[in-house]
Image (cartoon, rainbow, N blue to C red; front, side, top):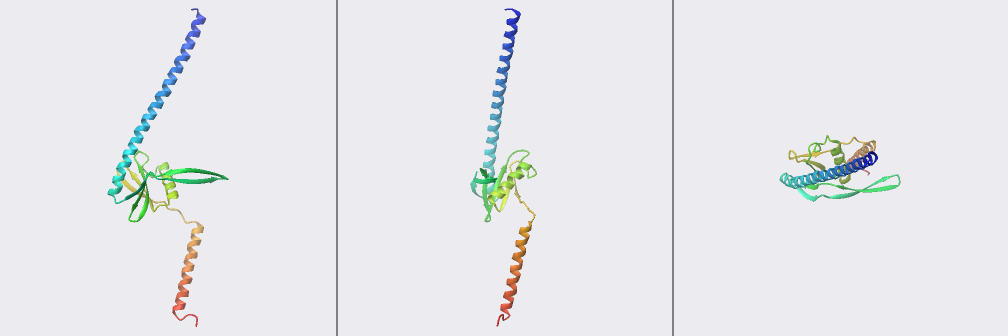
Length: 181
């Protein structure tokens, strides 16, 4: 082999080794990601089974688990459809609650942006009496309540109802006093 052939052989060996190492890196990364996901899903399934026990112990009856609800969003003239899936739908004292089970380190708190947005989406989609955040880290149930400021429309509606009630009361009083003779 002369120097020129040796350089070509080394170049091909270098490129081939690089490709093999790159493929091994990709395969190893995929394997590690899949392993972490399997572990996370296993932990989630175990947490949700334990969550059922905690809910029942605290007086909640489970209506449904892993319930999905389709939502439609219109953007311009195009309709987008997607599903919202909740962990549990539970009832206590006649009130229906959406229950979200959280088992991670950072996520189980309403101060976490993703958790807060998820709870708000559940609230708007299911319109339950309340939303329960079940923190599996410390086995606690917290009721999440969203408080919205009254809009002008809501204030006008309240004023109309108040005036209708006041007028009804005056008419009733007038009729009880002898009314139209």
